[in-house]
Length: 419
Image (cartoon, rainbow, N blue to C red; front, side):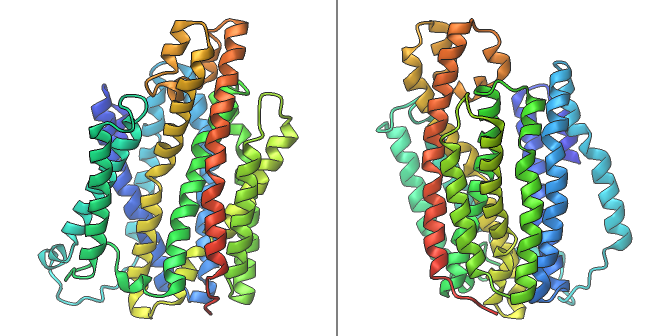
């Protein structure tokens, strides 16, 4: 709520970033705690069903987000603020429900606040944040602001690699509660599921960020209309979630769902690369369905699969580790494809005669101009050329994504079916 209030009242980019940072911290905590509560209350065999229920609730509301946000953003230059302010009443309602209905039994009798604070893995958190910031800097500014062989970019990548190596090396020696307990990744299935959790979260948001770009920059849809055009993703997600938890509840097996799910994701991502301005409604609807069916067979069953090889005493740690990999993956879906898209647009835009358009699509600004509003300011010939640039850049974005799904499918093949 605090982050939403700050973001809604922001008068500059720094204030907006501060608000979103506070929101992100809150959302991350809520996500982890909801999974821990389900894991604490529900037996492993039925856990997938309850996790699927929470995801379905999330997806139903997520489907309304683009529609509401798009319509609010179109109203006037200040209406975007309501995208943040509208969250506050729901936050107040959630706090009331937590106070009234959530009954928590503390298992650590006598543990003091400062005792718990001393158990936090400060070194691990510092190394992860520092390493992530370094590689994000390299990916954001390489190509558009600095060449890939620039000392700044190379140094950032070196810092990232060294930071991650030191992070993994030190996690085994943490006396408190490590960010990533290595004992949970010591068996084959745990390590594979952790990697596939990263991959599925990455690809989920990859599509969430760049499918609307296709509709707005290629199909010339308004933000509201683009929000409506991703509804097949949401509808199929609900149906696939139901199928997944029925299968897991009945048979208690995850491996086949993971293999088929990543195969479906690879197929859908490959088909996204075939979309252009002439693609029919049926084509993009079926493509969304293929990807969403695969994705939601996977994401609903990863946590139970990860917890299956872990003793009961480590269930909370397993849940937080699972959330760590998922949260880490959520950093990249904007950075990696946006870097690909911006760099490709800058290269292709050199074919456009108008210098103003070339400038708008250069120096990392292409993603921000991939909108129906920008295209509407261009002449017919300029619009056609710019749409072609966006189309070809998006194809490269989609060509890269299936590699993650195929690799995860191969990893899932050597996963063990734990009861």
